[in-house]
Length: 354
Ligand SMILES: [Cu+2]
Image 1: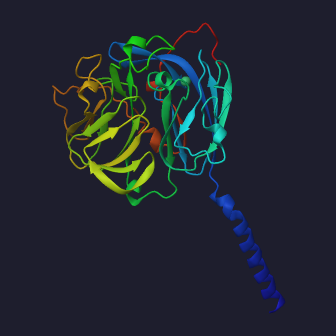
Image 2: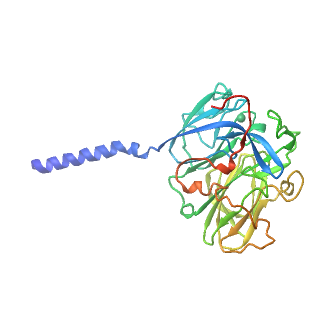
Image 3: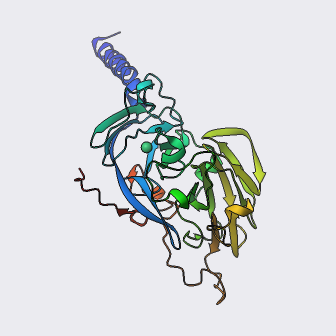
């Protein structure tokens, strides 16, 4: 070997060693840092029905947090309300970070007291339709006061079908109790009766249509955010259930009705191949009411582009919010996404907000 080829070989070895050393760095995820407040607001759930909530960034559902598998996430939480709260990151394994699991008295000394802040740090070590919610007095805070939001973790290796999705639709199901709607600190006990039922904090007719075009591949992400089991039924289409609680199913299956219980998530992929106007609704009949009056509750309508709306159609003159299911936010890459239409009205507390 002459001196020249020796030098070239040495350079190659050095470069190779450098790349080897860099490999773990290359697989590290991005650093994502977000801030959330918890505020006392009231939201309009159904016509004539308003409920007091503790709202992440003042809105129900809470902001969409959209990240990539492997990202390091830091979330600063400030409690502007009159009672303590935490955030549990539901579906995050918290490998090596169990003190960030959000359970007061178990993984953190105290809940976040009124006026105080707390920071959670963790790695999103598994992908899927995850979520976040309070872990204090959950039968009220989570089941009745809107303390939940979506945490979508994109997989590093999506399936061929997942790559074809053109429209993401996030559906968070929950219920309400008018008897306690304006009484913080009460409601949600076993003897209490829910009388309003909602998608993303709204009951029909205050929900929104899902507008699609023929050829779209829609991914429905159902969340059981409240305390009822909802039997979600889509007309006119086959739903291919691909994921349960974020985990890919080894054998995806078709369904036209999906039972979504408390805490559960299901991803279903639907080929939008049947132009028309079709409803999707909860098949628990009593959920389809607002304080006992039909029609209400968790109902939406799939509207295809190009299908004329009849004069008698219930949502003929609907003012359309294309981001009601976070479909637009989901197209905007990674980050935290607020949504103005989900904002409530601030309740005066006689105390300054931070
Ligand atoms: Cu709480």
